[in-house]
Image (cartoon, rainbow over all chains, first blue to last red; front, side):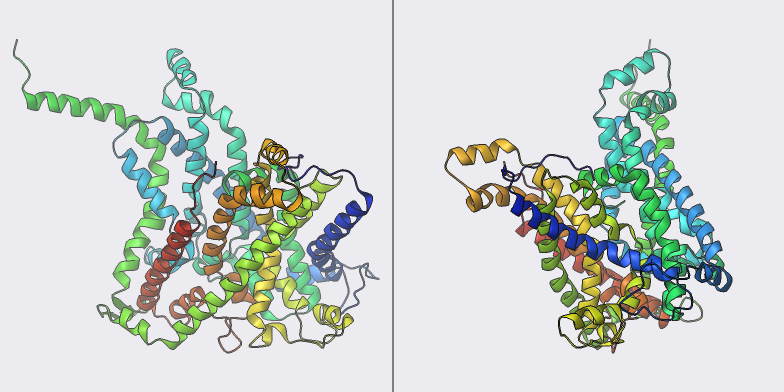
Length: 284
Length: 305
């Protein structure tokens, strides 16, 4: 994890006993976070397991994929997986591009209403999303958008947090770049796309990862705007699996299916996630 | 040649300004439309519906401020507010202590530290559904359930966890802590590492050592980070919903019904969308008030040096 390698707390002389104690403590914490995931994986591969009982068999014999077959046969899990991928990808791409556009406009633009709109955006940012869920549902049901991808993707197609993040990034670029572009005959769009955006790609990547994870893991909103099983996202669908009281093997197969995609993104994009959090402290 | 009149000049200035502005609007138009449809309009509809009695289908009747008066005597709402406060008061101190403790633990130039930090972050990347699937099984009331087995090793009898009126909320707190501490550890680490080493050196020159080094350098300089974490975590804690929805459904006997869960209940189980909208306004005001008080008290956003 790359916050930084260096430490600022006290300069310690190497002390083997102290170091051992620290490692033991860290290992103990690590067991509490990794342990449940390991047990989840092993139970998902165990045959006919109704309950998780301790002591648990970490490497099941025989190992089987039956639980996953049951999951796909009995629920719409494959469809949920598709929905989640589709919604998360479109939401992420859309949100990052529009944030980049608006961030550019707020950093460089000189237009009527700039400050008013900016303050309005700030006002929306402080609104806790759970307080807005009911009215959002009311509006969407009046527009006939319940159970549509539009409802699932819509709010994610723009990000105020992202707009602020990108605005800051653009502000850190000297104006000389814009001027050089303009002299070379570039219009605003060309300046944005060819001259300035390449320099904020790391910020956009950070935003993209945060948005992807946030969207994939979101539960309340997508649950509210979908009532049909085939429109649910994986997170919402797995929520219904958890409530339905199947056997442990099925539950853990669902958990593995929900966990693996985020784990993959985390492993590949870890440094962007950490950067995003330390940069802002606010989730996508 | 005629001299332009003031109004003509104003018009030409207006046109110039308009011409300068126009090219920028396409850059914000998508944002604006999204916020209009998914934020501004719902905002307005929240106020409009707060004075109506409606199930969105057949009934629709103006009731004025009746909803807000009913809140005063709504026992379920009061219970939900107490539950939310109870959750937050258990959760925040533990979260701050645990995440800071772990951050201090891993903030050392030791081998493998990065891997440990990544491992601690793992629970945070899981969705609430995965969390619920796992912990519903781990908190099984069976004597041979995972957690009951583990506490049995140290001689504690099996507990009922999520299905016990007194243990359900602490169980939810525990699950939330497990999920969140890695995230706040990262923020603490950023705060710890932002403290310049020179300050420690200077303090040592002045004769500070060990605990006093932390007392007079680390702790004061971490205040902005602490303020940030407490405000952000509190806003999150007040909105707890997903894990409760899946794991306990607000039960047993409303023991885990939080304000958000109650709003959900009123709207989607009882079809009282007007009352739920009024509750949403109340909830928003409560969060705003608490965040403002905290920010002021913790001097949020102020620099320390």
